[in-house]
Image 1 (cartoon, rainbow, N blue to C red):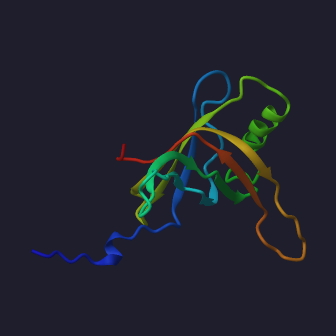
Image 2 (cartoon, rainbow, N blue to C red):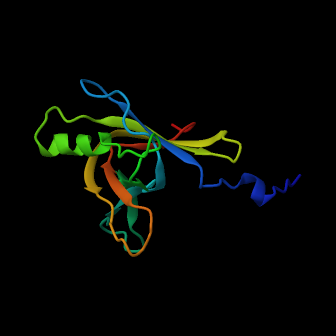
Length: 165
């Protein structure tokens, strides 16, 4: 029996999500930032493919799976935090500690939780042992009137969609 599914009922909306950071081990804040990001990109995994050209086999190339490559996560948010409008320095301090030579480097596991309109979690992407590789301050332009956006680029060692292994 064929079962038809309404495509609109299975599509995830992408406008509600939350990002969290949890300390892997050692000293430093156990939680980091407020998760108030406006955009997250880089939820990608790409597999290397290795071609093996076997002698005597001229009609095809054997393809083997190589290592997984994880794209950096890029988190963009408004510069000001939700509490009282003050800038939140935790993410900048994490990056500055690395630049200043504070060792061991603090690493954070994290998650990106996608929520439906009622606030129920519909998908969770988990990333592991992240470190910041780039931080971009807001582009300030008095003429544009746009929200000041800052970016955080994260290199990480793994990405999973919760519920998969």
